[in-house]
Length: 116
Image (cartoon, rainbow, N blue to C red):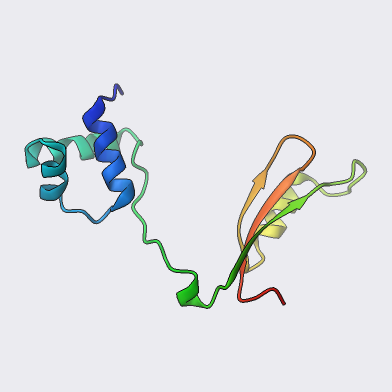
């Protein structure tokens, strides 16, 4: 799919506010609402827009600390990266696990109430 500046502007607006009305989105981009609706539909169909989601306040849920934990596996580890990622992902406080290249093997994003 070829993108033009209007597509990029629509995507920027949607990233800032996914709940913006089609009318307001069209107005901000200087296009007709029907044109805007068609462009957004096409961006969804092409997989450019994959999802709309709610951003939840961690503080409202009692999460006071988020951290990134780096893990380096020993060469003789008896667990695969795949298995370790699967097991770590099942921990309630884990938000995401990233496999890295370099000195660090895994980066684990966690969210907890407090340091303790």
